[in-house]
Length: 385
Image (cartoon, rainbow, N blue to C red; front, side, top):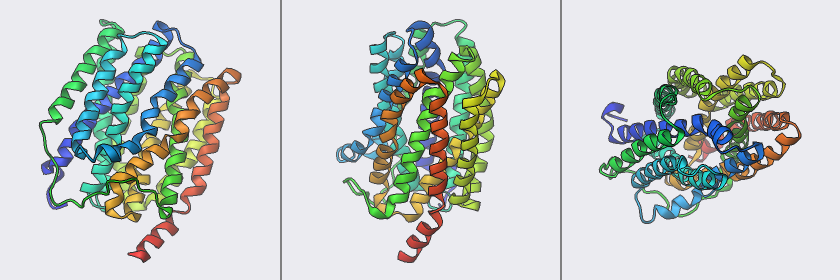
């Protein structure tokens, strides 16, 4: 990369859209559990079903390959942000179980298709030496965006209804999506991407790590905040404060984690992540302290940043023409378990709320075993080059 990041059109484009998407998703996450419990009067199994529906677009990310036959990748990013905004704005208009399913589906198509193209464009436009640092910096901006929107939600919830909050932030997100259609950050000299599905035996470890990351992530996404609200009675303001602390830490920590991945390698960083997650998930199942539960949530979210290493590992072993279709395939694999686990976890929650978290610890252990194969995969890729 010859020019500074701040002068790179694609970096600026991804930065603006990532800030917007992170802020919009943060609003949805902050309000959702309290909206679902206090306004729509849902229980654990309802939330599990909605969270499963939320992951259907992720499961369908492989369709990105076919969308790219008619739409350039950065245009699809813009369209995805627009969809996220529309889904967010409509959430408060349909305060029912069916309404939440519909608006969650629209919002989720926007979020997941943006994430697919964002990761693909990042790996294409930034080489192996700087990609971890670039993704770390973008995650830092995402954390800052979430922190700002968290403060806004904390203040505005005292004056505005759920309907007004969803509508306000949805319009803002959709407006940025429309702005993005007026920009063209693409470079003409980039390596053309395959316009077909890619599924190769030599990428098996990337697929396996992606699948396990998606499975354990859903335990966190579907039930960690719900545990805080249902068992420990966190309010909207309480969740907003927790998110603020969380994202304040990640704003400073994400670039550091990106640099550590570049320095120490993917195997070591992912091993550290999964060792920590085993402890964290077991603690979720055992904790009775309101404060300690909040601390666990913050620690859990910090380790999400380490997932950068799965994609940068793939960048090192992949054919450059495989990146866009492989990111789409990876997102689909990531969400295979995600479509089923929240609903299943919701039923298990009714038996004992600890079961989903203990399952998350088991998934983290499997991932820890898998990452030990990274060194061999990198050596095989190096020898084939």
